[in-house]
Image 1: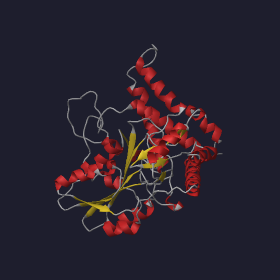
Image 2: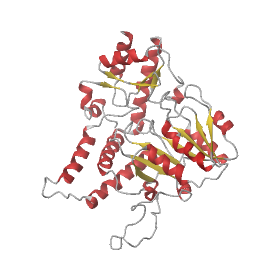
Image 3: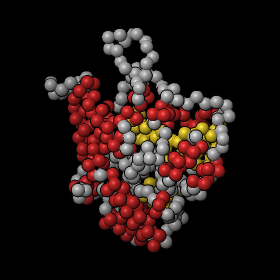
Length: 379
């Protein structure tokens, strides 16, 4: 049985006084997430004489279970998951890990968030060329990508959901195209994961990067990567002291041995407070049900989009529901004034590229969407 909306809203105390629709930037932390972080910090704080200040061993089961929960969300195996600091860290694992040769090419849609551009532009110093897929208001077709790919293209990297337009990419079609062209397929999933459902294996994704602080509603400074088994051995992993098994009896026996799974991309001590928060956030999401969450996210966004169109506001991006996500962006004449007007009514969105972006999630209600529309109409 799916949960009631009131049950999930009880996790978020801010809903009593604030209408927050800025989940595409950073999300509020739920009560379970705060409790998990507080519990972890309480152990490390040492006020309880029975608590292990060095809780490395006792926390390991939480790390294992968090990988399992992430794997459930992505429809893959836990061995394919590693924790990272953020999306940029994960994408740099890929960008720096491939054995680039002069003349290799990378394809990226133009208008991407810089996170999904700079790590790959940085490979130009190795003689790699970057080709930008042309877009229109953050949207593009599979044919646009196909025309951009060349025989020398080794990698296509795209955002699952474009950060400004909210355009949801057809990952399954792009995955099939990349498989046909023998191109590595990378996805920046931060604007979709936690709002929309995803099967990385069905979409033939080779590498995925995602920070946890947006739609997953985890703390900042913790995220995850997915790497397919086929791609893993083609990447030169970064090195630290936890990229392979630790021999605590012979720490000065320097054997460069890597874990046989995605843990090889872990270099050093994790942000365990962040892992505790991510563990709880994934628990809340899985308990609610990813399919239930997606239905609610898309319904809230569609209500906003339809209502704003009725009020005469021009939407930035595509209005095609098949490419819909949780993001609705307006291109008004005075975006700053509209943003401040909503702020005055206790409604938080975001300004990006002089456009107003609204990003409701699954705990938001239809009544809240109507409240936003009423505030806009009253300006």
